[in-house]
Length: 123
Image 1 (cartoon, rainbow, N blue to C red):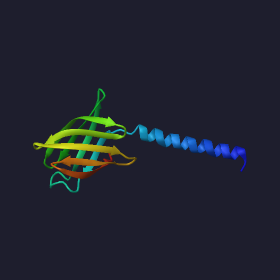
Image 2 (cartoon, rainbow, N blue to C red):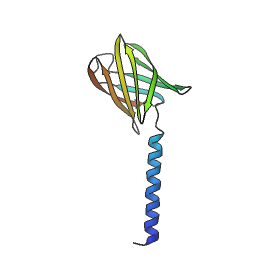
Image 3 (tube, helix red, strand yellow):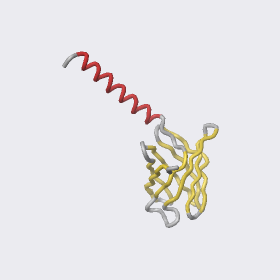
Image 4 (tube, one colour):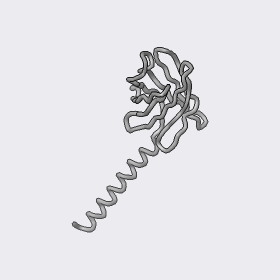
């Protein structure tokens, strides 16, 4: 193979790799999302989450048929966001990992690990 072609392909692969890395490193939780927790009790299994950023503090508001709940401070560690909050007296620990077109994670409550999936609300 010609050296010029090899070098061109190498530069192309490096550029593509850096582009993918840059996109993944800037992923953040923003805006309105619908969520699904199929194994949660009725009324908590689906709803919406709105993420807000103010003064470097990420918070969220969860709405479902049982009410509205606030997550006051989501912490970021690498590409994972975590927080602890309370729903009807029960401690809830949530861990979320942004993907390219959705957010996946786990909700831990009363000894159960429940998978959660968020998809963006189309406005």
